[in-house]
Image (cartoon, rainbow over all chains, first blue to last red; front, side, top):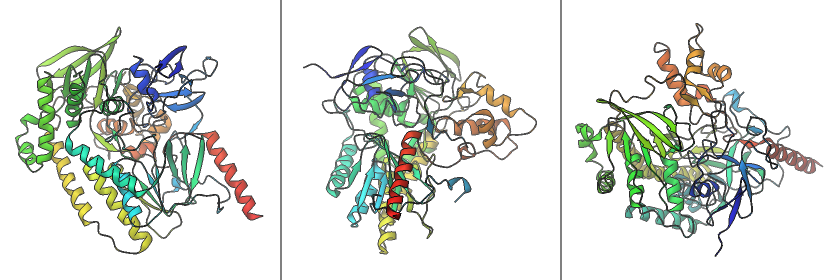
Length: 101
Length: 468
């Protein structure tokens, strides 16, 4: 049976039903999730949605790769790409929840 | 409530019928949240559970995906999960999956980010039990921020989810019993780590060892881990500190230090862990007063990080206290409190046993280029420059002027380290606490401004209708 896949930088990444995007990328040997953070690449770190270090874009929406379930035919991209693949400004995404006052 | 908590999302407080109103909203589907939900439901209350993942269990009981090999685990742990998950299923508590708790705004509305719909739900429960668990402590070391370095807990939950050990040469380093647990689990899944680097030396702590005899369950568990490690010939490098991680081609070159000197190891991956602490960032304070807004109680590791047994008991305690508050009938929490106290003793004994040896202490001799705050790319040198000014900066000023603890992890991985380093730079001054840097206010997690605005405008529209 053909395994379901999602797209990551032009590559079809297979995943198991119920698996997180981070786990599928890891199983495909992808350690860096691409540019996106000031101090380096986004990557898997805490596994519980706390560190925000594994943020990716899933069909354009910013999600923690460790929480977001992989889904067939979805387009998963590094944080610093928009849907067309062109680099965005360096601040990751418009959020409330940085702790600035 | 402190002034910074008075943060109202909506101009017009909503009283519309569209607001869903469970009696009790439990945040987090780990052992504390599940047992709180079960207790509150047993008391006849309408309970809803909010869980960020598609499955319940939390980090400790992370479930394997369908078809994955379940990670071999102790019979006692399996039995505890079976009992708890069955009780939860029987309680028929509705679960909002893929949903993230944001906070309680000043009018008492509870905001939950529903990741499936991309909308923020506004709820008005009578009580909220916060059970958001723990986060791992990771002390700063040069290179800790590189891709290919994770926390040990992160590595472990991925093993549980996928039923597969991380591939390649893996090094585990830091401090505490989780390191040997993860090493044994990797060995059972067929890829033992190349070594476990441990700052303490439990085998030399005779007094702590003697006190461990009071906790035979923990001793048995530790013994099993050590046997599995021995069988797979995993070196347990005690009294050793991981002093740096450097990229070398595809691999890492890792610098280790102990009393005899330094040496280097090669690894493909590194996992770090220096303990756990409550994941209480951005949570509202406990609230049991007569003031408006829901009763708010914390349960489990986010109240006091004492591990799974205490968390489950603390969830029972919170569920019963909520029932007592809402029904006016007295509930017995003495049993739960005994379990918590016993586990507090066990954790204190473990901490004594694993106390880092001199020469392995964190924060000593950190090079200036060591990253402290990964989200904002701020280094130990940046902090030293800020704190060497003649006018001493407060935690809040270090955040505002230096951007420490200002990024999207909201200080979860840098605030305590930054505060500890500040205390070392000014030993005579009162030591800053992590909250001086982070502040305490919602949202407890980043949320898209679009979702918040949508929730606000929807709420105001509905309120207008009600007022017509």
